[in-house]
Image: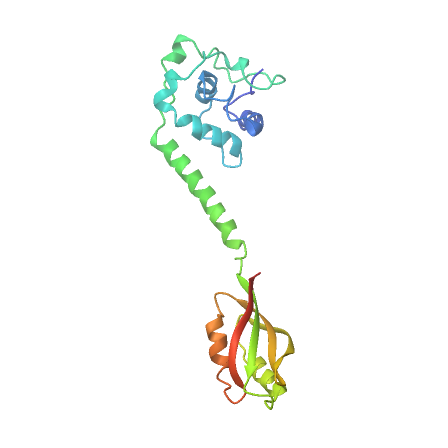
Length: 225
């Protein structure tokens, strides 16, 4: 068992693959197994080894509690994939010499800057991907009832006036004449609008402006798309 040489790119790749479906080296909580492997890694894994980097940063957050984590540290050859041999050359991680080395507390400023740089790069990549995604445009389908003054109103002209209203985010659809009584028909017309650009108040204001033909306008149906 082992990860190869954890101070080499190949060893870190083995660690990354091993952690692809695991949160910790052993079990479901941080333990001395994680401490042993963490201390064998010379610094944060590169950003493309995101499983290993995620694990590294998580275990690093236990700096003050490392001694209280459960389990007993073993040699590196006791952890990792069964078909890989440990070649890190650190020997048993529970030896006296290793106990005198506190790699959790020895991160110098350069390592901190490196970790900060990696975080900033990943955040920049995320923001770039998010910015490239097209924004969702909120739209609504509206059915309007446009009523004339009387049965002598030229309904063809009335519809022509309504459709002459043009605006960014407004698309006119199908229409029909609907009897309302006494020989009078109303124009029922469909339109699709972008909610941020066109509202029913604007439509009513502009449609009723054709006062020679239009008596009133009502919203018969309003549905979000």
